[in-house]
Length: 279
Image (cartoon, rainbow, N blue to C red):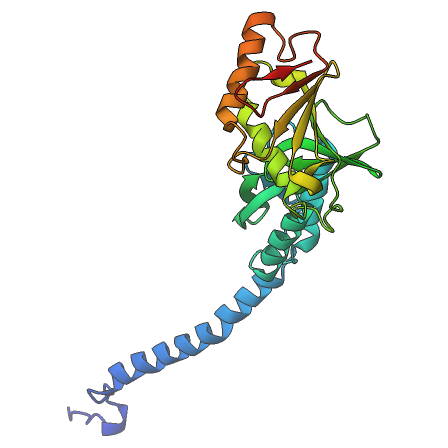
């Protein structure tokens, strides 16, 4: 029986690729992936940046003091929220929020406003410390230890129980957070800071600066109406005056003896000389 020859066309053949073909294919795939990522990732970031923030955003006022009025706390938080953009990546909004918090006046210094999460913003800074009320025809204005104007003004006689500064010639600052112009308020507060921790601090009702423009004299008034002639500001005493610490010593001695810095029944005490004169 004759054998049938197998045709060359029906014989299966394996296609052999050149040695460079497989690496070239991988390179092409990587190029395609790189191009795709270059297009897709920026679009993803853009979409995330433009996406609305989760609501509500929580504003944290770091180290907020217990005395801060609730309405002022809410006002600061709303000021921050109004300044923020719609994107968690927005830095301009954070800078605007930082400036807005400064203008609120309750911080002596604002270090930063930053996000700790997409739905939380933290305000960090040094809070002002309310120290006294500067009294003028418009009412009683709250100031801090450095004489900076704080966002609180009261009708005459209706402010909190703080030291009152009267007889001030300089006008109120134009904006919250600004120091009272001139040297008189600063001098009065510097003097008052010397006895802020004394047990008789509450017996000093006010500081009178009505003579400041004439000779730099500062007067105190006790809660019983006694006038204490302090003299010039601490460190600026005239040659005839005793140092500030000696004046404090005279007040402390009177308090130790009678429980009152005014002796209980005095109407006027001059603290400027070596011998305290009382009437």
